[in-house]
Image 1 (cartoon, rainbow, N blue to C red):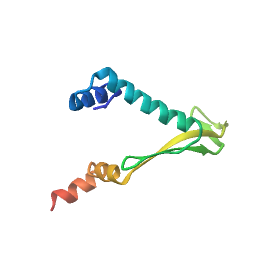
Image 2 (cartoon, one colour):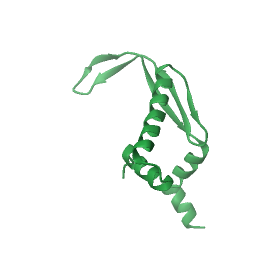
Image 3 (tube, rainbow, N blue to C red):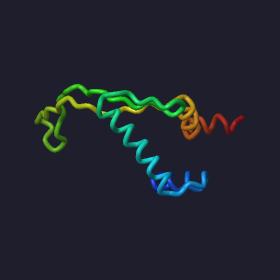
Length: 106
């Protein structure tokens, strides 16, 4: 299942009693500010959720799978990295098969 922005708006609206358009405006503005900060190279830290930051990937040489003898230069570029916060990491860890097996045996 995928959680979309629309799903978020509906759930928040139902829980708070706010009009969906108001909730949509707040959610959109939040995402806009996060994107704006990242575009400036700033780090975005949301406690108990995670950290978004811009990392620059080094230039490297790749291979074309259809012509492995041909080297393809891949230029350096900036990407957005996300590191989950402690609470989210713990919640997601519960989904791993190893964690489910260890909790089932308890």
